[in-house]
Image (cartoon, rainbow, N blue to C red; front, side, top):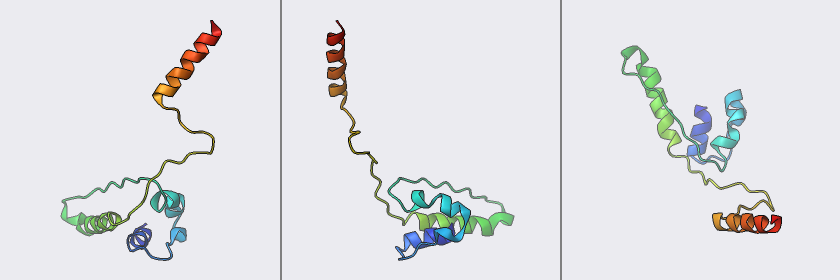
Length: 97
């Protein structure tokens, strides 16, 4: 995961998603057009210092990733506004009467 985050953060030409099964599963979430949230768990205990530093380094690299989230829509399945939906519902009720 660290290699993928580093590659995405530095905008490398090749992103090694095939490095692990986790990155294969998360490939479309990490580098795609979705919004992604990363949580990090850090410990103040001295035995966990190296792991905490590694985690903080990875999170700081992840903050440099720029994605452009967009709404995925299928052709012909456009959303109706609330006003349009209410108008259509009124028309259907009028037809039933």
